[in-house]
Image 1 (tube, rainbow, N blue to C red):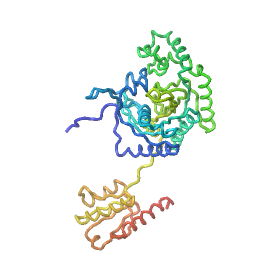
Image 2 (cartoon, rainbow, N blue to C red):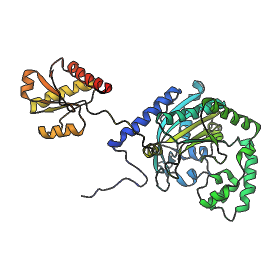
Image 3 (cartoon, helix red, strand yellow):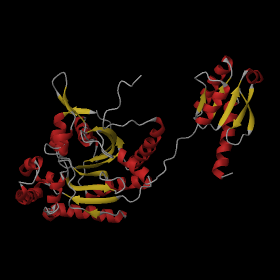
Image 4 (cartoon, helix red, strand yellow):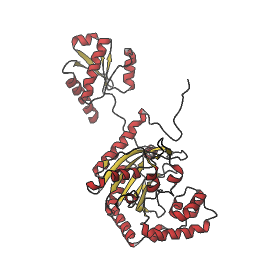
Length: 433
């Protein structure tokens, strides 16, 4: 019989044999976020469409071409989130979190949705880890955020990933820059794609982010934003660099980075690698000092970043970074008969209560099949439990690797005795015996 359906194009399944890799990476990210004072925020997977059109920007590719937008039965226009920042900003503003003391530091794991041509490192459903910070304009916060990202890469033992930074200024100094871009790109009106022609007057910086090869080539000689920064933005950028220097974080100033979303101001940055092809940006972020105000709040300078989980895992695989496999089964109890099955069920419950991983038969297999299964799941110890063992009140625990056998009580001393055997085995392995 054929499957009635398969996964939708541009989506991926994370299977049980792979999910431990995600959990390992997520655990490191959570611990790093906590060490910097970030607390988790969880937001809905869909929002009112105007949140993204106002926050992300009408002239961005995300809003113009890539969002999954639909009308509800009630006639509301809603959109599956294309990124995590706008939803997090909406939540802290709506619930008055900004009144609880600044800065507010929030972290998240989110699934995001963009209608793009699926390829390696670019999916229609993808996942991000992000850090967002609200209520500080101090450049030390920019550097601290970048250090948090760098620390995650270091903890994951990722190498050959390069930090590129830039400043795209504030609305005041960007006016002059936009004027210079219009003059430059105006010479190429007959060569620009239709989308970029529409951007020329509204937001010429978006042309720098165009994916068209022809427009990319034209943009190579466009004016650089760093030549148009006002004194305040120049000073802010210098301070960010000086703090990064203090922290020993290496970086390259790349004046072509503008990021793909309109809410960015001043500092923008990307961590890039050559290991995963064209989709080499693994982390991107920066300041978005006007976003809260754009969403209806007061002026609250803010900043953040997001890491692509799929790209990060792909990079680790390309670099041969080994992710520790989950702990194998500590004990498998193979019951023979109905009474033994009940006793085994009770015993594995006790083992699990002690924090260890235990299994017993739930498929009604014979003994030989059970032992094959115990091998398959990597059980470290096994017990064969039949009527004789129940009558005597004791059984034999077998070390599946060495074959060593040890008698153990099946009564009140069972957990204590098994933990002693288990701990001794673990200690021997750690000592290399």
